[in-house]
Length: 125
Image (cartoon, rainbow, N blue to C red; front, side, top):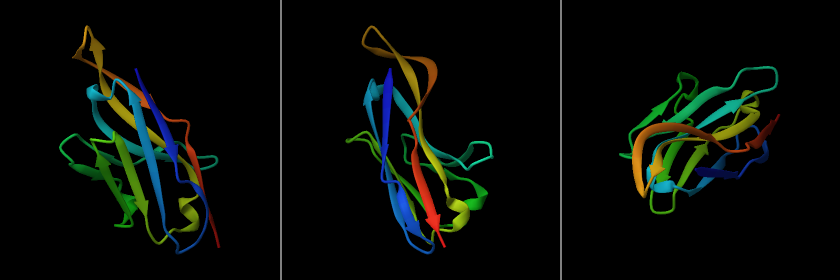
């Protein structure tokens, strides 16, 4: 089992910046990929960015270079830096992790999805 705890959300003026953090606990040795999704009111949850254990990152097209995902494997933490915030970035941001299953002290290739509770980002004009 993996637990994810996000932090760093809040109310920010348009044009400002923000850094979200997500700390993982539990069977963290089995985590492969970590990332961020977001869900705006009345919209479906969408992928923002993902990063694998080799630090290879993938970004959604709408990111436009304003978002940077990074990962500290020693601290089991993933970060999302957001620059030049826009009103449309207002959403609940969810941390996501893919992890193999711990079986008798080893990571078995049985993948599981884990989600954090979400952190609210509100951009004011």
